[in-house]
Image (cartoon, rainbow, N blue to C red):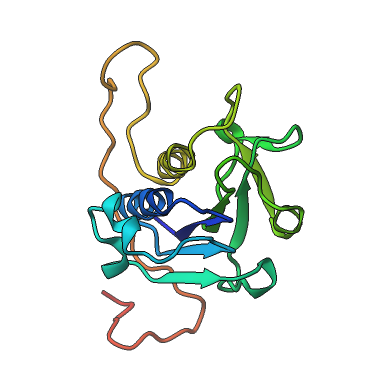
Length: 186
């Protein structure tokens, strides 16, 4: 899959939810995990839900406030929140470089966080979901949008045509450009 993404949450207080988010991010190939204004005592109890031991594999950033957050240049912050004006997830074009932020248990993303987001998306449900379930749905949707899969069948069952393997073409050179180790006459 092209690009990179991170997953995080604002205001989480239940360590099991932190562990679930970390495990979900790790499973889908997150580049890093982050929290903002988390109210947990440490990652030790979060590991009960994170049997993949994601802190051994993913960098973890813990920011105390929205103002402290720092993302790589070009990274778009995508809030996941059930608001009237949010983009519905099935219609959302996921940025190639993204950090997804989810709200706390029994709460919403802060006004400051929502203002900082480049996009706000919502999962089209009747009510809010568990933060770990919501993260899994968003990351699965990203995976489907940026991954390479055969066209989905319009009838039940497997696709009729398999995904063809990508074939790389020859390099395209700008006029007069010399590339070390490559003979353009061959």
